[in-house]
Image (cartoon, rainbow, N blue to C red; front, side):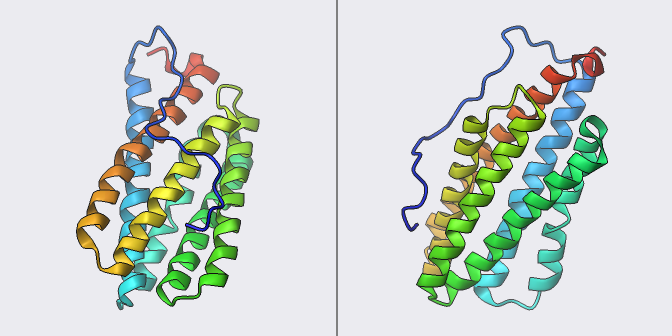
Length: 202
């Protein structure tokens, strides 16, 4: 890392309603969002590995990864409409394309360029956090910023370990990424349910 992220924390626990009854509709929303975050980190890992290894599947793997923002938008549009959902997809797609750009630069030893790209990456995380806080009063901008910063930090560590050929650390870091991503899925679920309680009675 290049010292751009100022917040240090581990295993952030999001705020949740004191009384929480899991109706089938809540379970289904959580299932969808958890699946999307799992796909997000799964295809990100495969894309990183392909970029670092200069594998011939870079293009189709990256294309599948870039479908993830649209899949998120399909879920969010039910509650926020197509325009806001599309805005989220654009920001989330930038998160992924910047990550691919940063991985390539780190692989090629372009330290100066990577430092600038990393700044854009964190600025994008700030934009995502601000956007989510704007559309849902139960989503905190600071909390989303912290979660996204942790996500970027872990992903950068995973990329660095892959480039260094430290595959044990690479796998271990990925094992930290998964539960942290699922925390984001659960936080997203909680906010939507709190904002639209009438949609989750049954």
